[in-house]
Length: 193
Image 1 (cartoon, rainbow, N blue to C red):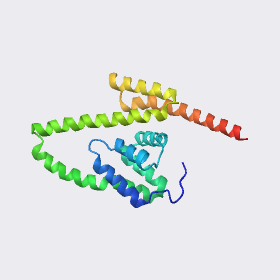
Image 2: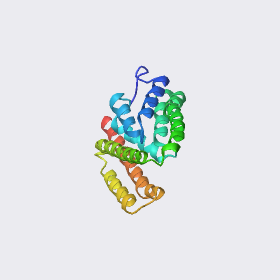
Image 3: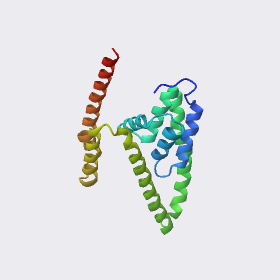
Image 4: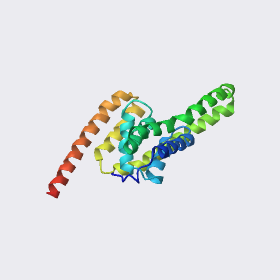
């Protein structure tokens, strides 16, 4: 997707957008990020978001920070990457520091334990809903469905570790998808000429 210079969000817009996402997101910012980046701001298509999210999950570090760095860099280079990642971190670091101090005094109360269980359930629901919504953008990649089912079974039932899951399902799926993309690009070039 190419952007005219007027369509590119500024570093300040990136900072405040990611700050708002981070403040809204207790238990997981990715569903909120997907809604804002894809639906509200229309900075990426669903397919582009899925691809960027896949890369952000494959490299070390928190997914949302990796995503903010890539998106910020895409629009404003290193300044955008810095602004977006600082948007993810600045207010949450202060809030987490304050909440950690408060949590130490109330951590053993039944209300606190119940609230944490409730937030965990909501987080699972948000991530599941985002995943289901994003599946549509990958409908034509049939092997991806096999990788998805294999991963769920291997991790959920078999208890397979993350590195082994990536080796068994991630790398082959990436390699096959790259071959498919190259073939489709080659076919498109041949049709143009």
